[in-house]
Length: 363
Image (cartoon, rainbow, N blue to C red; front, side, top):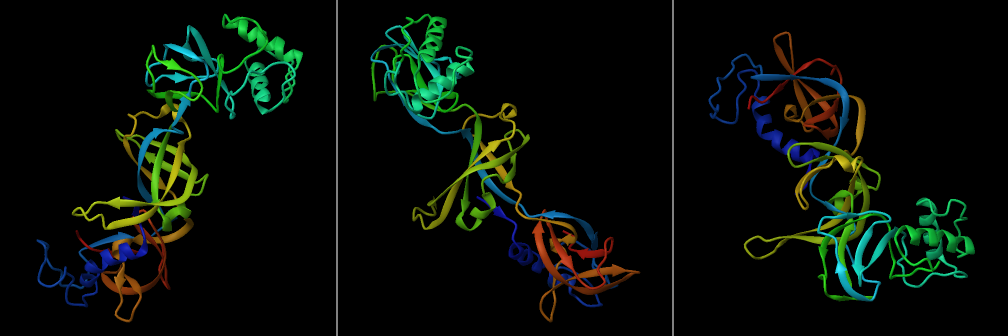
């Protein structure tokens, strides 16, 4: 459930205490005769004060999230045959590492957005050829290759060197029986088949995710603007650790977030889903699907005067003020409200200065 620090929320909560603060010269107390165990003052001063501060104030929205891995998807077989080896659940497969094995022959992971769907050979052209050449060059098998979409004799020679390094027949041709393309390294979430099963094109072998950790959050549609891609966040991890990150993407197709209340399912609100990535994924610990809290930074106002939110008074003439305490006396100062955040509110008003003392409820 998101916790949005909006002006209305704080002011409504403060008004319960504000009645005690706007009590006149006789005394300051909580409502009615209920002193809640505190002694009444008879000098018109508040039980407790806080300080007017000058600071940078940021509004924050706190939302619940789930720690997981990115881009879950099924990976289909390419080689026709019997599965003779599969990686363990949780294994991370990187570029040029074995993804699975069929009929004793391993299928190797290379990086690319397009799947390996055909046999590549001299004379072929296309973006899948470019992907192959990018990998051969990056892995050191084709330092002189021009990375373009044409399968040349130089491509074939580089491919033969790659095949030799893996104990494969050096044909200078390759296809789905040797290579699978994925955009990046993958983590095995679960096996969709078992050793001994038949595999082939279109038959799921593994369910995989991206290898790096990320967090998924859901936001009210009204708050979606706080999670624009690139927005910096702070993630509170299991165990109390904190990590920096940013919003990577936002799914703009809103869905409903149903909460069962007495079986009626009446409480539904539109939500958007956002992905949050970590600045340093290697430092993130925690089990898959663990709950986390994400703080979206929101707006920042620099070098402004602030008071605690519960220092606000509802003035009889309308609007809000604070009770300034100076030289043993208390007076009400009307204020204009600005940004709310971090338990404080931006205020401005005639005669209000940094360091002044203002009344707050003694709770």
